[in-house]
Image 1 (cartoon, rainbow, N blue to C red):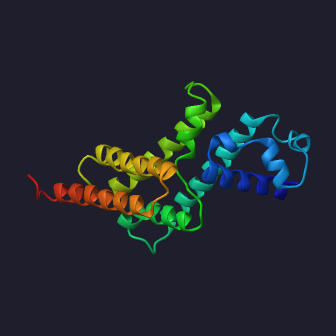
Image 2 (cartoon, helix red, strand yellow):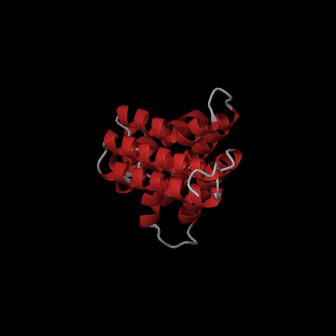
Image 3 (cartoon, rainbow, N blue to C red):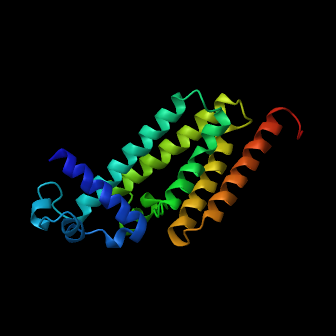
Length: 193
C-alpha cells in the first residue's frame, strides 16, 4: 500500500499544480485511483490532512533535490544558485505549473500556528538557508541580504506562475537573479565602491 500512497501523493501534487488548492479533495483523488473516498481516510481523515501530507511529501522532494545538487560537483556554485529556474522551466513544459504550493496553502490556512502554515515556513527557511550558504561559499558581500533578494525574486516568479503559467516570467526572474548575483560579486571585489 506504500507505493499506492506515494502515487496518490504524486497525483495530488499534480492536481495542486494544475488546478490549485481548492481542487484538492479526497473524492477527486479517490475517483482518479478507482477507490472510494472512505478507503483513503485510512491515510487521510480529511482534506486538510491530505493537503498537509502532500506538502510534507513535496517538501521532502525539494529538500532531496537541494541536497543532491549541493553534492553534485558538475555544477558551479553560481549554477547551483540558478538551477531552480531550469527546474521550473522543465515543469512548465510538462504542463505542471509549480507556483508556490506553500504560499497557496497558507492563504487557506493563515493561522501561523497551523501545521500547514508551519510546514510552509520551514520550506521557506530551508530555501533561504540553501541560498545563503551558497552565497557564503562565493564570499559575497552581505550574503544574508543577497539571499533575501534572490529569494524574493524566486517568490515573485512562483507567484506569477500560479496565475499566468508563462515561461517568459521564469526567464525574467532568472535574469534578475543573475543580475543580483553579479552585482553582489562585483561589490565583493570592490568594483562598486
